[in-house]
Length: 255
Length: 288
Ligand SMILES: Nc1ncnc2c1ncn2[C@@H]1O[C@H](COP(=O)(O)OP(=O)(O)OP(=O)(O)O)[C@@H](O)[C@H]1O
Ligand SMILES: [Mg+2]
Image (cartoon, rainbow over all chains, first blue to last red; front, top):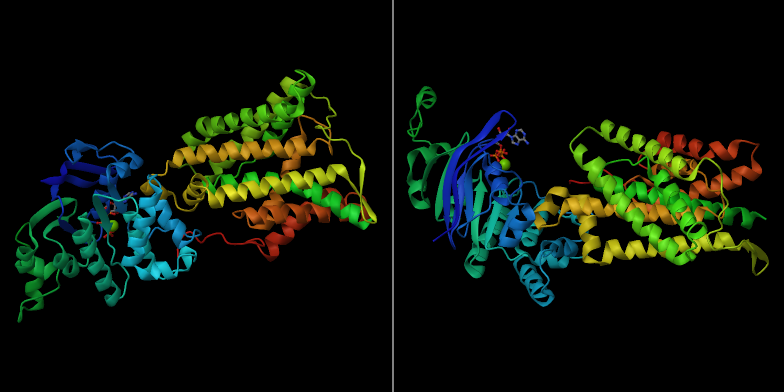
């Protein structure tokens, strides 16, 4: 069953149309990735789902109920948690308080304590640093903090916006492993937006390819990994022996 | 003698500190500099005065009623004036709060007239002996109430869920939205708290200064206090206020006539030249 269904959404910033009728859906319990270059509209899609912006047209349905047009706080309460790009911590709050703010919408204090322990278990470094102010953490630690904080609301659907951006390869690997664990252990559905296609395709079951505000392709991730265009344009592989001139001419087949 | 000068400086400094605190709370949350903070203080003081002298309400209930009315007024200002201006340039917001200050002053004049009134706010001035020195009971009262209020606010913003969420929304609005914190409600509550703190400042000021529709100008002295403290910092505002109060009071005794009035501004210019980020300069750290 699809937990989230996005149908034909259109979003503009002023006169600039950045989502031109986007549709996709996410199976409950799966990891789905949206790949796209800079400016393709990935962040715009996530913001629309979490209620930060309202689509001009189209609909977003979560567990069968329309949620477009609702306030972000109502959407969090329904079970969608959005980790925005750029590690948006509360810089002058401690790690502990940052995590507790993730549970702002909840009142079940005992369960909150248990979830906190669980997050410290996923990210032991956060436990070591719990009394430290968030701005003193390294980039990777901040990324762990914002993912942990998002989990504190007990989401059914977790939206992750480029969690690997600017991190060292080893850290990226660690974060993706934890994303997989969260999906398997908590049964949290995950929508992962990435430019690091290699990593994203290796953890997701289904992938969408977004270009200039349109979904141009979608398939199971094994199929995408095997696709020539995806290999060339997203995985950075090129056939041996192609000359420079041919690269220029080569058109993506989906155009 | 010197101790008396210092204690009177601390007392008036506490009032600057409380007004500066109001500035800082609003600035931290919304980057709006509220030039009407002193005028809110005037309204708060007059409300208590009217309740006590015209309606014969005892002091404590009169004070509580005023605080509640001011909280509603603060929320009203946020809703009617500031919210429609969200996203406008800083300049527009500054003009709006300056205009608001003038408006409040005029309305204050229309309601209470342009005379000065004396109002002791339930406290009479008598010397209190502490060892070899005698301090004014009014100064002790002002310092004690300020301390209490600061401790209360500290507790609220650091230890309660609502308070921490307001602090969080001040630090990162986007993240606050995504946590489900009602950011609009937070701003509204910040204005309410600022207006309530202004009321306390106004009441504390009344034993030192006559009531007058113009008394909000004292609030201008809180501006250098806030700058001195780093403008985004609550402890900074308090320390800044007290430094201004004490140095002004010392200047009043040891420097030629007139220096007392301009001393705060000399400090302001000095700070802006030497250490523009203030003594607690921690701004511009929203992102790493
Ligand atoms: N607030 C805004 N105002 C105007 N244009 C915007 C705004 N935010 C994004 N855009 C434009 O919308 C388009 C899509 O932006 P979006 O942030 O969704 O892309 P993205 O796929 O997330 O890119 P990136 O990989 O760089 O994060 C871009 O062309 C961008 O310039
Ligand atoms: Mg983006």
